Figure 1 (cartoon, rainbow, N blue to C red):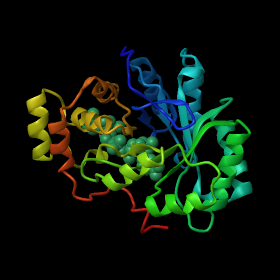
Figure 2 (spheres, rainbow, N blue to C red; figure 1 turned 90 degrees about the vertical axis):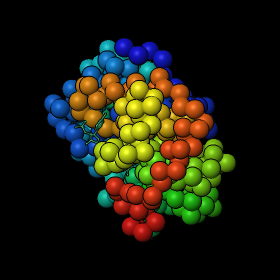
Figure 3 (cartoon, helix red, strand yellow; figure 1 turned 180 degrees about the vertical axis):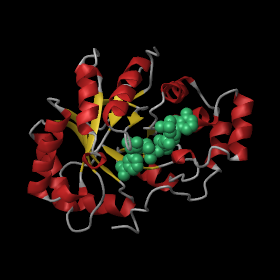
Length: 273
Ligand SMILES: NC(=O)c1ccc[n+]([C@@H]2O[C@H](COP(=O)([O-])OP(=O)(O)OC[C@H]3O[C@@H](n4cnc5c(N)ncnc54)[C@H](OP(=O)(O)O)[C@@H]3O)[C@@H](O)[C@H]2O)c1
């Protein structure tokens, strides 16, 4: 329906859509239907994880789609219980089997577990060098984790997927990632809906004639941040995708930057190891 959408070029030259569909907490027929509707709307990026228990459902929808596989961008993640070098290689095989796809576009370390994050990353490098994945990255890596990784990695992650919203504006991590040519991808970009009644957001949305959600997602895009809002409702999927048509003024972006209150909906990775 909407043909044009913004892409980013990752450090290794792979193009990735900036807006995608998150797929946490959806299963079976509901997940399959949501992915198929999202593809019809124009989404090309889908974010799942071994931990979500729905790779089979997401993969089924992708395979049923008439859009060529090369036009779609599928992310999945190493489950925490599968971390470590050999386990990660096996975990990846399990994910690929469940998805039923010949390749994965982006494979992420889901969480920086202290004991195993190094060997897990080395396994991702192997999978990438074996050409089983088009890009590799991490999730929930703060600057200290990225610094540590730089000490042993031969390949710097192409993506860091972190919680990132106007109410959790991780400015210094965003700037640091830019210096390292790491693309930031925002998970829970809508703060799971918990801040959509922020009066400052409502005022801005009214002024712009857009919905609060669209303004939030347009703010991510204005910062060059990829966002993967989750919805299983066709109307909301459309509303979220239409954010790609909005260009905020630098002044509006600055106003939204000021919403920050270090508010999280997920665990703080710096605390939860
Ligand atoms: N790497 C990680 O550790 C990590 C952690 C968390 C999430 N993620 C990924 O990021 C994705 C998104 O994060 P999330 O699911 O936690 O939260 P989110 O996308 O911020 O919010 C999803 C919630 O907002 C609602 N919603 C969606 N569009 C809406 C709209 N236009 N208006 C009002 N409400 C709307 C959804 O309800 P409906 O479905 O009913 O529309 C759902 O309850 C996940 O699905 C997952 O793929 C990754």
